[in-house]
Image (cartoon, rainbow, N blue to C red):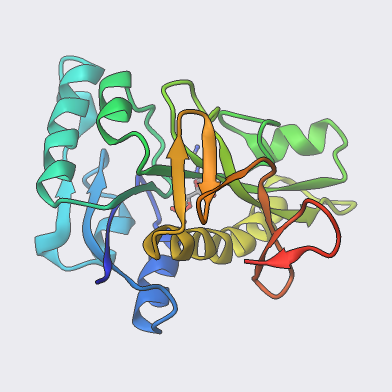
Length: 226
Ligand code: GAR
């Protein structure tokens, strides 16, 4: 049975589109059951049928908790197996996170634990990093601090600015997110406390996406495609 995926997005929604395309091509055995946004004008919303869209202007709510409560109820109503933050730019409060904990994933544009938060590309360039990338992690109440499932690495090139680097990272975000969701959708991925389990075994080191778009377990040569 196809896994039910709810997607939270605040803007353009290119990661959402990657999910939609992977489902259409048969690469991802899943169904997008709702797209949720804190920005009613988000382009992401237009990528799905009107009946699948939910949005509310977070600024119109008296508190973060009040917005999160409405969001959580809307997400829960579509009975998702997985809730995916794909360019969702609003911090989720503890109540939301705890309600969906264990099935709540986020894609973040850095090699966590480096550069949680915003402006990750500019900060990596300013620090003279040679490598940057993206991470998919389970969400916990602490921002960008949950266990990392998988990462994709790109080089930082001479002359890069935040725009060129973010475009290079975005190009690997899409296959990275789809690859992790394939594991999630096929029941191979679980979060137990602070430990990730893959196929019932603890995953001590984040998986890596190779240039062919395949995830590898990095511990111990030869690395094993998963
Ligand atoms: C992506 O780069 C994603 O990693 C980032 O926002 C962008 C959304 O792009 N997310 C965060 O920064 C979360 N802290 P998209 O709307 O085209 O998918």
